[in-house]
Image 1 (cartoon, rainbow, N blue to C red):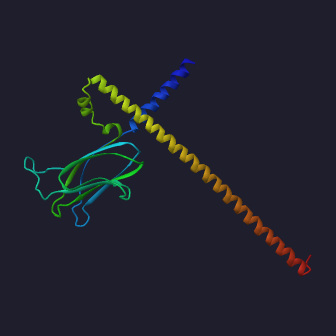
Image 2 (cartoon, one colour):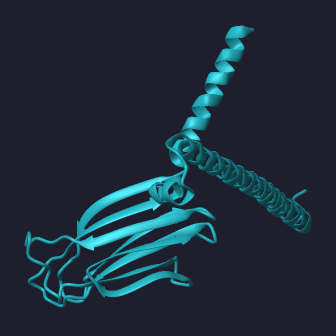
Length: 222
């Protein structure tokens, strides 16, 4: 009995840890914008759930060391929902910037970088950091504004992570309910299709038998 309870608690602990690990996303990357004329754009897509905090930082990599970047080496950055129905961030002809917003609906969000240098000889490299969920919270500012000690800060962070886990579990349960409903509807439609198929087959077979019987009687073969 004790071993069974221990295994149950251990399984529950692993589940909570797994949900905590996947309840946020941190992406840091460096990429080049294509310098070909008319194709100097690169977009990324991320599925974000509702009420998630999103923070992004981007900048053009300076290959000149201590020298500043030329003023004509700029990019335009846009963050929007899939299809561009809602725009959360738009920065035109900049060399660095940041964005932050709260996702108002679950879905795919698009981040696009456009090279506005208009010089085919120059290839821009971009540093991009993208954080979603608990990791998007500025913990330093939380501690500074709240004027609390380190332990209280950790408790607050754990509380926020627990809320994030709860939201993630709710989201997974909703998706599971949607999938169960979809499977139920699909099974019913397949059953109806099979029934209609059998009905058509037996109807055709019956018509063939009736036609053959009529033909044999008409020709006095029976």
